[in-house]
Structure formats: structure tokens, C-alpha cells
Image 1 (cartoon, rainbow, N blue to C red):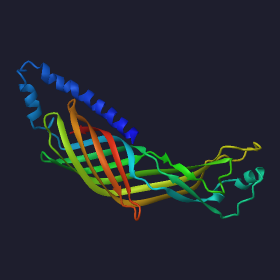
Image 2: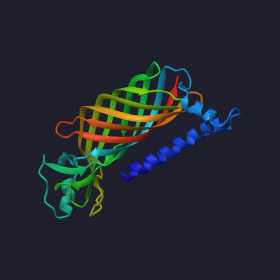
Image 3: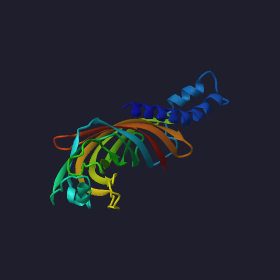
Image 4: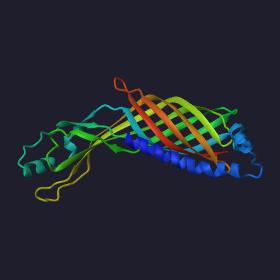
Length: 268
């Protein structure tokens, strides 16, 4: 969670740096008279420019609020020449068709996304948001027994991506638009294990991998809620901070996430 706090701080400084040049214009304008320009800046309610569509990019750091250990049933036969390596270390062979269990703990990750909204009136926008999480290794708690010999390492990874309709409610106040959003949609959770040769006792040029020993993608429905603020920059651009909450309805073991992030949009 400390990484999340540091990310929020960096985002805040970035947003402040973008907003200050705009605010400075209000303070140095020729008609500055004891706060009248500042008052107008805070009370004026209008969009930067008339527009119908908002299209943009997102980057977020995703942290788990609820995070259960995961297990995967790996196919031992997919590791080429595993028994040869085991014999080199004086270990018994693994029977053909054997399966083994790997246990890991999911870790926080980075996510990149897209958003597109259609503006309806001054307050409501309807659109679609999507996110693609970077594949992240889990913390291995149990590597199993068949492939756990010293020469192999197991990578157990998770990757989450989603697409969801979204409703956004916000009102422009001069250069700023605070807003809330929410929606439901489709989430995919992919979990994969790979074995890689890291130690060859006799250096006999055995295949080193990585060997994919399991690869499972599951589809779920989910929801997101969020809040944020946009700042108008340039002619048609905005940058902003956004905090989203995600809940993936995985039967018996819901996944909940929080994702602070930066948004970059173009209005047209």
C-alpha cells in the first residue's frame, strides 16, 4: 500500500504542475481586482470548448483489497527432459501424466487502459472503459514436488483485463471537472505457470524453457465505481486523477481492487 501512496503523491504533483500555469493566467491578468478573476474562475460553469466525444488513455497502479492465495494444477509432462535432470541429481523419475500443484499469492500490478465517452448535456456522459493489466508474477508459496528440484524455477503469473460500459457524471467549473462514474462489464483473469531451467548440474545442454505447464483464462462479470477530477489543458486536452474500485464476481472468492491513476483525454 505504501507504493500506492507514493503513486498518488506523484500524480498529485503532476496534476498541480499542469494546473498552475493555467491558474497563473488568472492572477496576472490585467483585470485582476482584489479577487474578482479568481472568483470568476471558481464559479464559472462551462466546458473548455463545445464537444461531443471524449477519447483518452489511462495509466493506473492496481492494488488488491481482497487477495486470496491461488493454486494451479501443472502438467509435469510439458517440461522437456525433466526426468533426465532429476536422474542427474539422484532423484527418482516422475511418472508420465503426472500433475503437480503450485501455490502463489497475487501481487499488485500496473495497468494501461482506454476510455471513450459520448457527452449528453452538460452533466452526463455514457461510454466504455477498458483496462489491460501487465502480467505480474505471484509470490510462490509452494512450488510443488515434481518440478521443485533445484534446477527448475516456477513462475506463477496473473493478468487481469476488462471492458465495461460506464456512466460518468460531472460538471465543468471553468478549467476543472470533478466527477463520479460507474458501470458493470466483462473481466478476464488469466493465470499461467512456467518452468525454467536455472541449474544444469552436468551442463548437458538440456532444453532450458520456459515451459508453459498450465494456462487458464476465466471470464467473470464485474463492476467498477470511481471518482476523479479533470483539468483542461491546451485547446482540447485534459489531464486528471481518477480512483476506481473494481469488484470481480468470482464465485466463492470475489476479487476486489483499487486503482489510482492518471487520465489523458482529447475532447472533440
